[in-house]
Image (cartoon, rainbow, N blue to C red; front, side, top):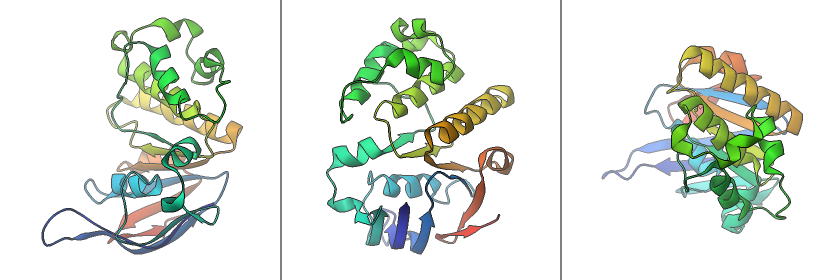
Length: 215
């Protein structure tokens, strides 16, 4: 379970404005949540505080009852993986990118060919350079990279925003398939309610610094 406990988070402006305002919510294990909200409302910030990439002002983020600020960063990265809006890479080849993620794994026993199969890419993609791939294929590689550490929680920051409808639908279906197969807690943020309805088992709205259920 991942819990926001009375969380306050401000922006960096002066005077500051609060993005999260006394926000409390518990995300259940093995569920898919879609969080909708207007652009600029703070959806990315929400994911970044859940992954401890951004510190909070007040309150706590609890991972199975433990305050994530007290956990080692490598432990957080292993257990909570994040897929960003725009594909970003740390090496030239697909294999190099998966090797980088493996640094955070508890055991270095991940079969990269199996990961390629999970994201519906052939194992030969491992030796391709990422610049050779379409944006949809790049996003699949980034998804495979999030799976290297065998996480408990998958965070997705509008990964379909730059894709055409057909490619976006394929990514959403792939995320659903993997989330259910691996029994992840998945939290997907988007400004497109149609995408939220396609993927989310529970749909939440982010507004006025907090979360409320729409389903």
